Length: 274
Image 1 (cartoon, rainbow, N blue to C red):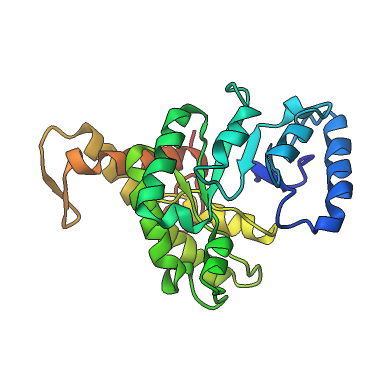
Image 2: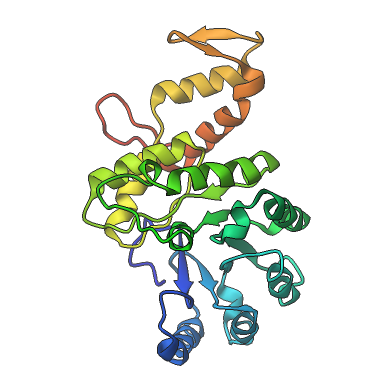
């Protein structure tokens, strides 16, 4: 929280599943002490409370205004209004987490989406809670394969189909193994193919791997600029059909990524952009 990892842009302080029930009082004390420090450097901080009552408790802490927002765990149609009751204005950003089977039910997903649309300006990203989704079906992912090569793959696709067309950015599930950078790197590439351009790191060793994958290929960046500036409805680029009407959203995303994470030239060295 104090800036130990300069490349880290945001961090979530979890008071939910990563804290044992017996340790909750100590965890809350730790958070209260942290907020009293009046941090002047470091990543944007978010807190993930266990329930609406804990959210209300945290909001009474001195220094809570230093938080950028809150992660809403296990969001459902029934519990989301309870969280919002404690957050009536746009002072804090929200990162609701899609990690219950309700989010995968088409009928319930529509109801949940309608609730989220009502506060869309406050929703920074919808997080996909892979571990909870797998728990619901009694599975655990392998550390030797990406999330897309197991039961989580179809779930990710279903959530993207339910929420992304309505303008919500979704965040990819965590990769639990922090000693398999090769698999993590491949998974991030697959994330990007699915339009997921944020991912939670569960270990400092993952930060550089994830962010390096977000750097943009220079050919893709040039293509994105060409798409947005094109006067023709359809044109060819490197043997591929480009259609500005259907590729413009992708092009905007590529340009934004390049502005934040830079561009990889053919040599493989990262070049920073403005």
